[in-house]
Length: 108
Image (cartoon, rainbow, N blue to C red; front, side):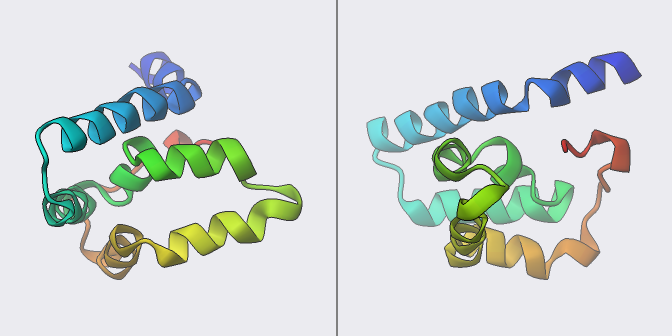
């Protein structure tokens, strides 16, 4: 089980790309209001923490590709996280998360 989880975490960027693209395409094709995406992100945030931001957000994927998390563009990546309403609400609700992420699952 632990090896499976580590494998999933190691391919997180691929999963983020696929789920982010599906989120974007589904929203565009079915003309889903961004309010529903916001509610979905908040709902998953309350249950699992910042799972939407780390695993499903199309803009988060683009930002990770463009700026990464280190180097001179780290401040731009942090700016995106501060400018996103789903990231705000997930940050506010992080203490009441139903399912806590085990520390070894967090990608480095």
